Image 1: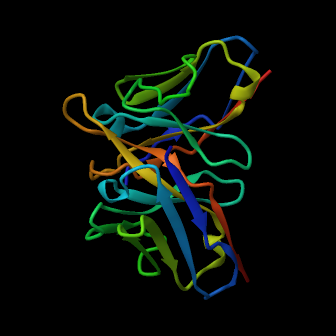
Image 2: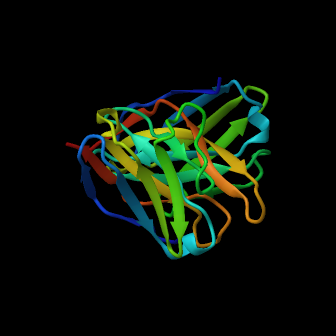
Length: 125
Length: 109
């Protein structure tokens, strides 16, 4: 059974830093791209960042570019999100998500097939 | 990035059929996936690759696509289907599933 167990959220002052972790089990972590998705209170889902299997390539939403860093440790089956220079509008529940893929002819179908339980990050002003 | 548009709210009578739609130009080329989210819980994948259901998702959930519109249909809606539903597809680069629709709140009457 796939499990993504998150940790590291909490209350942080504006301008502060926080690191989120997502411990994976039940699948071969090193063979799947991973993502972070967040949800501000009462709002919809927003993609934040993703990282390919090797960790060599990462991408970020414009809203977090230059402040957040995604990384992974394939030897420890863990995904991370380092968040710096936090702002009030970063307040959200953050989810890690495993990217699944399915091929039935071109193009590939991509989707998020498993999600962590979510961790709340509150940035106080 | 591309944009996916959903109706904010839809209602359905218990046991009836409801269709939730997602519109976006990217859907002419790439499929949408659908997620169910109940209050206080993480999203759950319900449909992927046009009309595939993960293990454990009831067969009353189905997906379809036509032109720039993807649809999630619930045939015989149950009380436990009341939730927010989000579609997701690739961004304008066409490489990554980074764009979510705004979500549809489904109420089962």
